[in-house]
Length: 54
Ligand SMILES: [Zn+2]
Image (cartoon, rainbow, N blue to C red; front, side, top):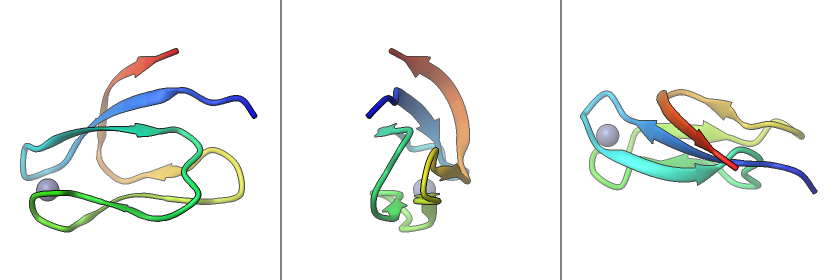
């Protein structure tokens, strides 16, 4: 399975690293807002993607 890690910034300012192909919903550790949801392939990212890493 291919994929990459994404550095995502929530609107509250918290940054998290998550996989581009998540299998479950990811929420912000700080404010609990959804940051990513699985979509059968590349995840739907709700936060702002700051950086992509291999
Ligand atoms: Zn947040």
